[in-house]
Length: 138
Ligand SMILES: [Zn+2]
Image (cartoon, rainbow, N blue to C red; front, side, top):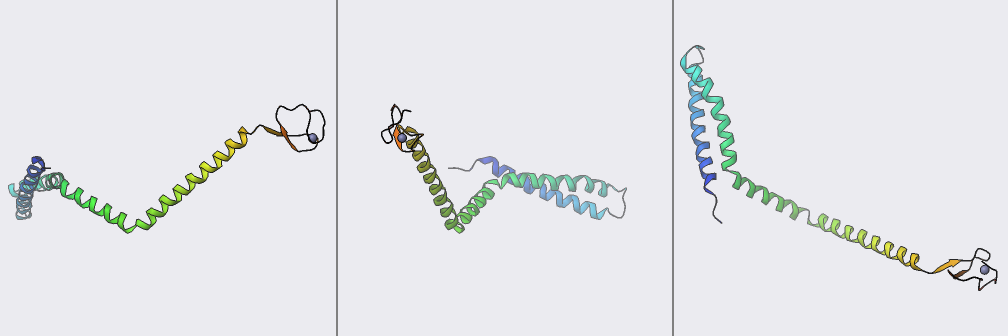
């Protein structure tokens, strides 16, 4: 994919303003002894504004390179921590597995049509009238 043109334009603008900033600071320092001189006033105006614009334009212009760099560092970090990441994935998988097992167990128990006799404590069918173990009426 072609790089969009505007990045190049911002780069050029950045360097232009860097040049203007250098010129401004040069004027500022030549006029430093005389605070009412034109050099000092021009320098005070051009220097700070241009250095600010330089940073703005260069950071936009070099964004593709910067983002390539940050992608690279993310890749590096992932590579470095591969074992830890694998650990996390396995732990999460284990937790999910345990949760599913517990849920299935609970559902199974809930579906069972068995209750306990209140006299002898044995398991009996839910809809039975008499206990099949002790014979008492429920
Ligand atoms: Zn019973």
